[in-house]
Amino acid sequence: MTATSTAPVEFFFDPICPWAWMTSRWLAEVQQVRDLDVTWRVMSLALLPANAEPDPEHADGIRRSKEYCPLVALVAERFDSAAVKALYDELGRRIHLDARTDVEAVARESLSAAGLDAALFDERHEGDAALAANQEEVARRVGTDVGTPVLTINEHSFFGPVVSPAPTGDAALRLYDGLALATSVDGFFELKRSRDVGPILR
Image (cartoon, rainbow, N blue to C red; front, side, top):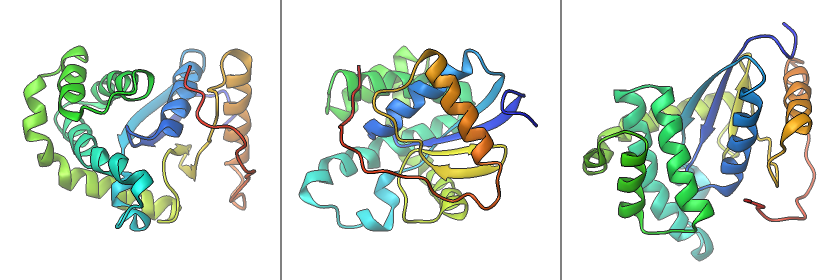
């Protein structure tokens, strides 16, 4: 299979993570051109062993993760990946672009804007089991020492890519094609450099 052939892709995200948000914008850009079959799946930073006792800097984000992530998992159970993507788009705009932290209002507004019932927020913890199953799947694929995003291309999974800002146009396509080729090599595990910029969301 070539890098530009139809490819099954899975994208695991936590709605509160700005890095996952930027990667999702890149993937959505690629999806407009490449023939990708993307399944959007939720994971939770709150369920990582390293965040069992979060430091003060990350405690509020972990608290919000515990509310948003079961909700997205519930939507995935009751609807489909397209509904998950629509909800993630709406959550992300409010969380990252508008910098809002009012969880309930953000969730209800996002549900409505995505064409879903805002009352699903009241049932969000019915998604806890599905979320835990997703987290176990992420751990099976890439281990428990990485966060979000996690990307699977043609059954090859890895943490990342971490981008800032999200590439667009030809740069977005070149990044995807390069990753698709690199991850097709069984012995490929890691490629990394230290970040010297924060999240560039706009």
